[in-house]
Length: 113
Length: 110
Image 1 (tube, each protein chain N blue to C red):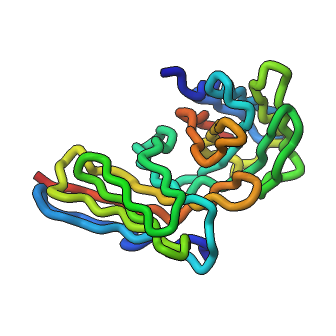
Image 2: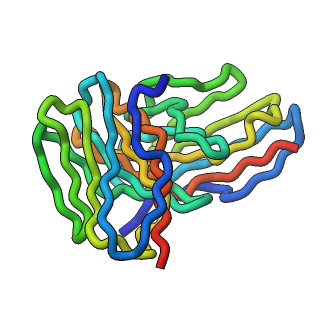
């Protein structure tokens, strides 16, 4: 079965640069979530989208922005990168209204040097 | 402080032993999900429990949701080395936001 696809899987950026992560949800899933997981930490909710509109906002820094496009894929844009942004970024998707089940992608490793 | 508390944080057992992982909160969740995560990979959904008191079985894994929908447990019978990994519970609140517990790192030794 198709899963949540994230790209790139690995990304190395320098401080103050910009990075963009992409997420392709499971087909027919219209809700997308972004999570950030630092080393040894739990995934922390950043932001979610439902039907291309922002649904909920978590601990997403002002330097980050995200959007969901007409084909339901989503992009997370991170600017003025800091060393502390180095983490595993997960995208997840779920079908609403059956939103109880949330499936995660493999994640994108961002390393800021 | 964590909204969801998992215990134990670390568990090292011998193959064939049984174990239980607990996930507790003072908050009520509409549902609770258990994931297993390998290093550098995304959490893989094991089960979703929705109804208070619900029990679900997945081969040697038994999941239970508390009557008040504030806590859950994961019981593994006759653990195998392949069960080694990080187990995460996550509660679902309004807006489909998942709140994760601290995770339980399980090591099953041969």
